[in-house]
Image 1 (cartoon, rainbow over the protein chains, first blue to last red):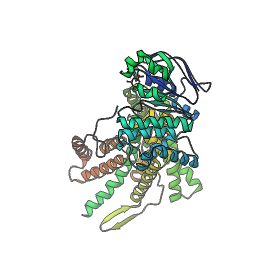
Image 2: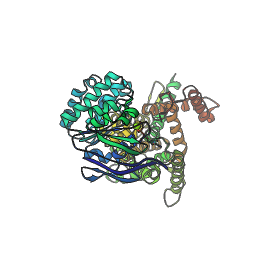
Image 3: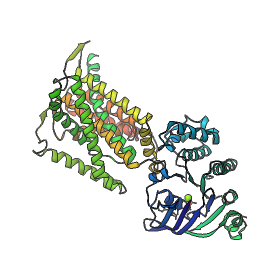
Image 4: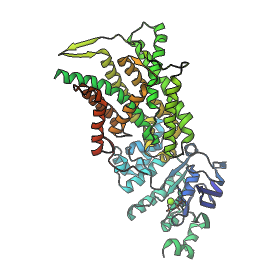
Length: 235
Length: 303
Ligand SMILES: Nc1ncnc2c1ncn2[C@@H]1O[C@H](COP(=O)(O)OP(=O)(O)OP(=O)(O)O)[C@@H](O)[C@H]1O
Ligand SMILES: [Mg+2]
């Protein structure tokens, strides 16, 4: 579904990604782990069109999308829950969700998606009219995911959904990620610092280190890998 | 008492015009975080559009009819909406990712360019012109007050436009997108929002309001010239800062208050020549205590 070949990204003259290649098969959950500053967010930002790659190629369903502006990719079914959630704090929960469905003009479809988001995250329904900036961190994360789902994505990228959220809620969020993947058939690329949990729910994993992929494999085998254990799993 | 009320009416009629212009400054600041110094000139262009449109409209409609006046107003707003989008597209868009100071200086350049090319004989010429009477004018006298029909038109049109703007910004899809872009451009792009079209739309909206302000101003002050936007534009900008830059109700409120203060200051015997000085002294005092403006968020800007 998604394939990246020798991706290179620089901010000014500082290279953030040197050579990243990865592949996400349809229907899978793939996780990208790595320490702070490794380039995980940059990888997602390059895929969703927020930054332009300096070299390399990105293919989405066989179509080259590298360097295309972000707003054009939403139509193709790409959605990105960015790092730090980036909800519209000045809009209500409802308006945030409507922004997620910005390109959808069919009211019936919007209502159907809204119902689906509310079944996944009932809390959002209770807060429908609340200004999003006043939501708790966990609720904001649900809103960020819900907002992305409103665009009916086929491919969903999530950047550290567990960041700054209570452990109990992290578990719920991860269950929802699995549910979204299984029941809706949405392919997921998940970036996480919480490598343990991420490898538990994913099919495949990539380990990124200072802009290079240093390891890849199916998640079960990565969890057994002693290098990863020491570096990321904290055992 | 009658004097007090009379000045209030005059002040509000002037403040309404400041408010209409101030909204454009504040909306553009909201999405692009820079001050479009050419905005006052769009106000001037609106007045001139009305000046040239009036005789054309009068070919089909009797002169000084309300319908004719409304048509002139709407057409001038449309013309300036297009001009506003054009200014953004030609002058500001190529500099989108440059430092804000670069864009700011460009805005000053655009402003000077418009002002001085319009003074050329081939365009408008520098001499003031008499603005045609668009609508029949009367005045009502009651309780010792004078209320001119033009003042009523100014206030009514402004309220109507503010209502329309509020509806667009709060209730429509594109208005929600405008607020989303103002808050976080990248997140809005991830929703599929084409930032460039939202920015164009913002310029169109602000410029249309400035054009309406230009025509209402010309109706009340009768004479127009290419530099008329300099001082009025500056005052409207200050009104926007006073209300809290980036805040729409703040711009409307700031405009209204500035108009009223200025009018009262002008009515103080012996001090009427200092009315701008007095008005701005009061604004500076208020800003000392509320640096973010009346309705602005009292916090440091997000990065
Ligand atoms: N806007 C930017 N300008 C300059 N450098 C940047 C920018 N964004 C990221 N970088 C740099 O690029 C590198 C990769 O950053 P990135 O945000 O992709 O890391 P990450 O793996 O997501 O880290 P974290 O786990 O902390 O979120 C870092 O060295 C960072 O300092
Ligand atoms: Mg990151």
